[in-house]
Image (cartoon, rainbow, N blue to C red; front, side, top):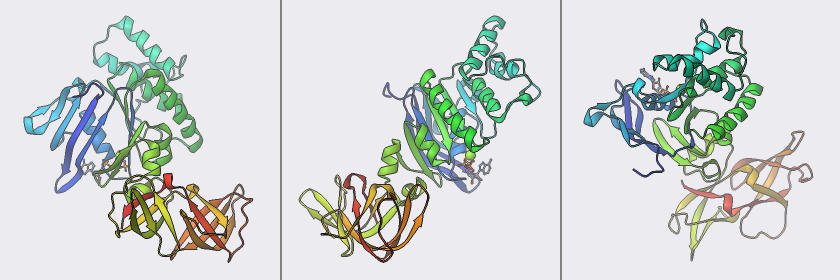
Length: 361
Ligand SMILES: Nc1ncnc2c1ncn2[C@@H]1O[C@H](COP(=O)(O)OP(=O)(O)OP(=O)(O)O)[C@@H](O)[C@H]1O
Ligand SMILES: [Mg+2]
């Protein structure tokens, strides 16, 4: 295994009865990396995390941490949770209401038999890291939601785990607090340089926090990449739609030397960067993000432009939102308030080839 791999999750399978909820998922996490599993409810994110933690036994595949096999059902290997050295914050943050902040954070150390003197120092250090110095004697119920979340985080990092597992740790917080905690989590990760596997169904959280994102759908990995890779170059329709708004048009691939140009049903031609991997004459779809398309008034149509007609203009306060009919599709495109195109006008949609992906039909 390469030195740059901390965790290897390989071909893991989990079944409940006849249902396969994790269906051959593979990924690796590098030391210090913030790695996110992103996907809709029920796609198998928590189950994946629980298999890493040792709360769930996989039915197939192998899980390896720092070169040590944690689970390999085919070889009869299964390391129990308390021997795995992981910190975890659960989806519904389970801090114990009958314990003080100090005792909540001290719990993992007590379980591990930490001597009294060093225990106190480690708890106070962890509380300082999450910004809760001075709260150690508080009852856990005398805290705000955000503070309780920080207690759960302090408890997860107090014994310096090899890997931190976070299952939607911000989902119980209101929007404003969630955004604040997101920034704090980012800063905390940088400070501790601890590898994190983070689970969320919130695409903006995933984009803002992660070094890499794995998009999960129905127990399978659809794509793994940096936030800009998965956002700007989704490999599947699902990834494109799940990560935000998409503009999708049908067309036919034309290979011209090394260039890949998609002919959009007579409405224009759009260049696709890189080797799109589709043969000449293949029916494809092109996908772009609405904000990567600019609107121009009519003029000569050059490559990377598609003609459309304005159907509706909505005033959104800080921008305009155009409804445009192009190549038989209705598209919603944002535009600056100075770009004034009246209803009924023909317009040019200008694509940025660096931000266009070709997908199969
Ligand atoms: N113990 C169990 N027994 C049977 N089915 C289960 C069990 N745990 C989870 N499942 C099923 O496995 C699938 C994946 O569940 P999982 O909790 O991993 O989803 P998730 O991606 O974390 O979803 P959410 O975003 O809602 O938390 C779901 O269909 C769920 O109903
Ligand atoms: Mg879950």
